[in-house]
Every structure is written in C-alpha cells, then in structure tokens.
Amino acid sequence: MKTLTKTTLLFISLFLVSCIKSKEGSDTDKRYQPHEYVELKHPEWSKNATIYEVNVRQFTPEGTFKAFESHLPRIKAIGIDIIWLMPINPIGVEKRKGTLGSYYSVKDYYGINPEFGTKEDFKHLVDKIHSMGMHVIIDWVANHSSWDNQLAKDHPDWYTKTEEGHFQPTPWYDWDDVIDFDYEKPGIRKYMTEALVYWVKDFDIDGYRCDTAGFIPTDFWDNARAEMDAVKPVFMLAEWESRDLHKKAFDMTYSWTLFDKMTAVTRDKKSIGGLVEYMAHDVSTFPRDGYRMVFTDNHDMNSWNGNMVANFGDGLKASMVLCGTVNGMPLVYGGQEAGLDRSLKFFDKDQIDWSKMPYEELYTKLFELKHRNRALWNGNEGGVMVRIFNDKQEQVISFSRAKEKDKIISIINYSDKPATVKLNAEHQKGNYTEWFSGAPITLKGDDTLQLKPWQYMVLVK
Image (cartoon, rainbow, N blue to C red):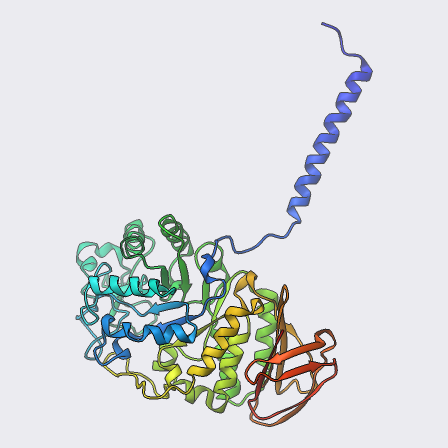
C-alpha cells in the first residue's frame, strides 16, 4: 500500500474541516428558522367553518334528539358547519341541582341521557347531520363527575380528596354537585381516553368541546388527541384561552377576552381602547394557525352573566358583525337567531321561543361571506387583520384582511354616537361592494364616511 503524501493528507484535512463547518453552518441556519407553533393538522373541512351550540333540553318542547332534527335544515341554511351538542351523558341524581340537574354532572361517560332519547336516536342524529354536509362535536366533561358515578365506588383513588380524605368539588369552586378527578393517576387518564375514543369510533362523531380544559394536564389532551386522530381526524374545541393547548391537542380555544372587551364598551360604557389592544395582541401574540372561537353569547354567558341583549344592547348587531369579520370562528348559541333576550334556566326546563327570527338574515349573510371570501377563513387559511387608521380612533374600528385575491374591509362605528370619520386607506384604494347593501364603493385613500351610532360597513373585493 502506498503511503499518503503530506499534500494529500493536507487536502483531506481541509476537506473534513470544510464539511464540519458546513454542517455547523447548516445547524446554525436551522436554529434561526421560524417554526409554526401549531403542530397538529386541522381537519380540512374546518378551514372556513362556523359553529352552532345546541342546548337540547331547551331547544324543543320535547327536548329530544328526534325533535331537534327538524331544525337541521334551518340551521344548515344559516350557514352552519359544526353542530356542538351540550353534554349528552346521563346526569347524576345525588346532590343534583334543580329539577333536572346540570349537564356537566356526568353519571356515565358511556351512556346517553334518557331525557334526550336512546343511543340509536343519537346515532341517527349524527348520521343526519353528516348527510347534510355538517359535522358534530359533543361536550365532554373530563375534569369531574357526579357524586353517584360508578367510578367513585370502583376507583375512589382516581379522585382528589380534602384534607380529611373526602371527595371534593374542583378546589376553590362551589360546584357541589360534582367531584374532582385526579389526573396524577394513570388509571383515570386511560379510562377517559378510551371513553373519548369510543364515541368517535362507535358513533362517528367529529370531535369534542372540552369543558374546563385547562384544569386538566395538557399532556393528557396531547395523547388523547393522537389516539382519536388514529381513528379519524377530529376537531377539538377547548373551553379555555391558552396558547399551549393549540400545539398538539386543540384546534380552537375560546376568546373570552374579545367578549370582555366588547361588553366593556356596549354594557359598561368604557372606551374602545381595550378592544383595539385585543386586536393588536391577536395579531402579534396568538399562534397564526390556532383557531379562536368568537361569540356574543354561549350557555355560560347566557345563564350566568346576562343575555345578549343585556350585554350588547343597541350594539348587538355591530358586535355580531365584528365577530364575523375578525380573526376567529363565529359561534351562534341556539336561540340567538330568534332574538333570545333572557337567561335560560340551567337546571330546569325552559324552552326557547322560535316564533321570530330577527337575526337569522344577518347571520346568514355573514356566514355566506365567510364561506366565499378566503380573507375570512380560519387560522393560516385566512388573512391577517391590518389596522386602517382613522381620525375617530375612540369610536371607529377599521381594518382589512386579505388572502390571495380576496379582501374585506370592516368599518364599525362601535359607539352610541354618530361619527364623521376619515380613513387613512392609502393601501386599500380600489373598488369594493358593501356586502349588506350591495352598493358599489370606491376608496381613494383619504375617504370620509358618515356613520350612524353602531353602524357597520363590510367592503368586499
């Protein structure tokens, strides 16, 4: 064998050093590349979806799955894509509140509340919803059970205890009709995950809305999502407002903050400064591909914090339009389209009045635009909110959103006073159609508009 010359050895050394430096440079480049925070994959059908919450008990005189089915064509016509059913499981009797009890006091995670019908009735409802091109998620209460859930007898170690060793509601809360699970115990994690998979696999539901999701360790949800996705791609909504849940577990979380910032203006007569701050934080701090559920009512708000009319007053329609055009998925709580102007009872029968539909047309128009215009789609599929500055910042919210060739401009006088407002719309110049009136509008860049109290305009391209 020939001995390598010094020149050859030097060449090899230089080559190896170059390779090492090249790899180091490559690794360095990777360290500084941006990464999408959301790692989960949303179901394809959710990209421009809207959502509708159903309180089965109060929806019809019968309060059953079968009776609710008759409303599906009307709900579909509004432009709803996801039907969210409040908990369908049997309700505990021990320490029950009211006559019928709380849906969120679950006696059997594998059972159906006999109030609503049978498992066959539920399966028929799911199939009917799917046949109409909609999807269905059910409310899931993983944080606590009823006192008389069989798990309390069979696995008392799966629950947290007081200092005296007794069952307890979720610590610091007065939810005395339920007892708190302990997710430090692997047993309850396995049981609850298998129950979640059961309804997806055996009844073909499309996912869950998860009650008090933030009270439960995120790693539980991460794993549960993976096990459900192995059956079919699911859609997960968390009753929580937190970045960490979006990474691997939940497609969407609540935007309680937007609700609070809107009612601070409409109900509490504060400035729109907090609302503007919300928009700024949404753009700069929230994961782009995380969905936010935005709303002017839901079952918690309606039953415990006043109804939509009390909370929004004359600004209700403007708030609905805002929710329909900001970043997020708009929610309709069943009854809103009918002008629900009272708080429904939570533990007793209290039927919704469907005799009038004052907001049905507005929702239908908003959701038609959401489906058609990509600027309003969800997460990365939609457009970023870009502020359009104006000379009435204490009254008027104005912003644009664009995606590919689609564009919308939302202009809302979010106040109870008229406004003559000048827009600094240099970058939005062009021809538009006002969505609700159909009127053509041309923006020249320094346009002045006359807006009545709570008046809104949505310009579409």
